[in-house]
Length: 257
Image: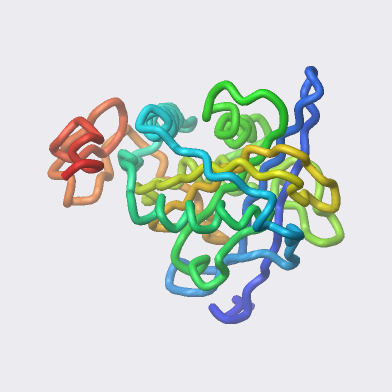
């Protein structure tokens, strides 16, 4: 029997990786909605960071970081396998970035704020150690593709709290959710950040919000077919690099209009 939109399964899917040089990176994504007509997406526990007022420092997300994030997402989206018939070109959204900035500033390793999770998809990433490129925090989401079998994550969505470990795919599926065409992110430097009970002394925290949200339970991330063969009518049959594209070809027109 199908669950109602208010009878949702809320879960947190996460992993921590220790890199060869001793740095650590962690990623987290939430699942929960049973259909795209309503419902909530969230987590079933919260890890708060004590004394956040003395443990955070705003880190400016540069224009080059914005471009890198959007371009990387579009590269991944354009090269999915099997190929997508309705994959939309992703653009930067300042409103999503502002909401991501507000949440990143809390230095709380959890999804939020809760009241926005019914509207936005959200990917989180955090790492310690040397920080060279924003893509060091984004690439682990894509790396989940090695454990993904189209069309559904299946075992890549471990059941929490009993099985909050092992392979997952929901960061990747949010990246390639065809209708999630807008993204906005923020990055924050957090000191003494509590990550599942472990104190990370200097952490770089990335929050990315997506709209419309993806990862609807029981749905595939995109429609399989010849690229751009099932684009929404609003695109006017415009296609670029396997993506349903707007008439303009530069994100600058979206950021600075």
